[in-house]
Length: 276
Image (cartoon, rainbow, N blue to C red; front, side, top):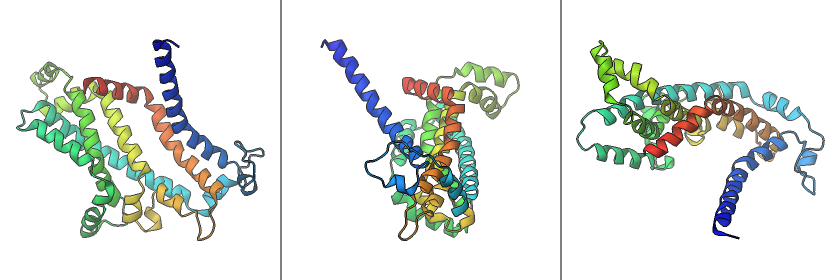
């Protein structure tokens, strides 16, 4: 095998590993959601249900208030995404455009903060939310998720704002726009791929988060989907088909978001990688 052929084979092998790692768990959960308990524990293992059933999806809605969990996750994810984008846009614009002292130190600090493990922030975040009397509310998750998403959103937007010519803003300000008006009317629309990329990352991170949600909101009325799915298991019973059905339902909003904004997110990630 020649060097180019071996290089191509290696790339295909790496792509196959990434594809299997990304899609196999999702396909396995999907298959499990259509199996009954007998088929799930049967040997040899059946990779796809021989007699698909929909009872697991019915049970997912009957055994737990799944619509409440979905609504709570959507509210928290959308609010935190909007707040993250608003604050990150202002911060990224200031870093990219204003003559700040120690600009590189600011960027380094943002990167360093984003690397803190969530578990190390649990106690201080909990104490802050308790001190503000925000436990068992949407804001008990919206504010922490915003803080956690700000570093990555800011870094993504900085790379895009730096590539937009200053002359466009100057022209808008000559026509009567304020600096903030030029930001929202000129810079943000031109940086749309970066905005969609940052927003999608913020939404998915908030939708999937479990540890903070478990700690901040113990009331059923404010449980998000990851915590709600944990409630399906009993002390001695683990209804994996029902849990899998709930997981599939929970994946649907994320898949819809990614499909809707796929082109913009991919172009944003690619452009951000080239510019960074």
